[in-house]
Length: 612
Image: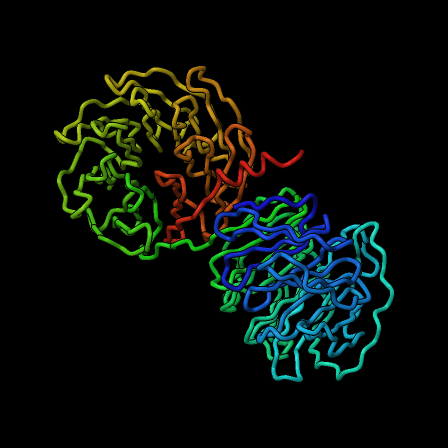
């Protein structure tokens, strides 16, 4: 989901405690509140005369604090949308705000290392101190114009607040430094200060701390309490990390960088599980909802991206998951594996409904369901097993290939089943009569077969880099497309039948004009062999994946990359969209299948609406 409304960079983002609201502070000097479920803008808070650097919700979600580049902090009543009061200014741009757990106090800090605590109800400043951390970015380009400081206030008792500080002194162009704030009395709160860095976050229980380093792409994870020798650097960012945020349970860390990517890290395993993209520029801030299911990222492109990352991971196979397919209702997923088993899964819960072992020793190279969801076809060795998709019982075994069968596919009406194998043959079967209708020798090794949406063309991808188009009615060759270098691992027709996508062993994805027989465009993005391609049901998007472990989603009309998904620890072998296009399934050499929730149409429409 993409949230729009700001006229420039969105510098900060935050979820309300119940997740029903999302706030974004921008360089257009406003704070926008969106509905966390629908993305609709519900309020625009105007009252700052400088760019808004940071926002924070009160624990009850009824109030919001916002701080700007002039050091000013404003408290808002979210019920009325009215300003409650402005607090005495800090000395520099506000780059950290946090309410105490009881909601009675507000802590704010700025890029000059000045920190203050207020009683929000009265507006009285209870304490203030300064000089707690150095300025590691004094010599950097000030045009970045954002406060990278993250402050986590963890009240220990009524008199003590722990604060972690890091910061940056750059401010947006045209911002003036305010006069020093009037000093007030009060005992300074206790401060726990990490080494100077670029961003800082701490888990709620204080068990882990994350700091970014001046070294490009480095994030220092510290296993506390205060023991700096229990630390490790993670990350392979190609530009400085601007923001970090822990999930509520402390098990995951979200990081964002200037190159526009957001990474999710497993804190205990110290490895990246997902990379999210979509911003048309650098990412300025990240936030995690209280339930840990949603992530938000604000960006220089003036938008906030929100992901619902509750994605089931189907775990159970003990070997490479070679294929994945959805049932026609989208509620079930079938996978085949090198562990010689077939599994039928509940797509909602990730639970296994049934397990079948067609041979017990031979790997399942390919598996798919017929359009009615009643018959399951699996390529096992040189044969094809037909099974009842409900009970898993074997109905028939189709033989005729003289070598391993690599691929199977049902025709759109389910009346035909196509198969291709290492023997260079493409066979057509009547699954109801359980007999072979025809066999065509196309040569080489056939890696993939796919029916056109109208069922009149059958495409076969070969290891010669060629695609043979066959007439399913008689098996005669209609055309031969291309002469690509390296293997072609998979082919897929667009829903309108005009385009045919191929997955190349050279890392290229090619879109072919079926009528003209020529490549329409080559999509470059993968760094290793592409093993699978799949069109969304509406034909507007194409997903590709391969040995580089990534899944790339392309806008077919624009011929541009929309997103890159990283979550598998080894190559991705197969892809399948759910019938409604809301979920993308990916199988992998890492023995797992991931179900990715997608909201691509809404996001793409929002991007297209942005000024160029």
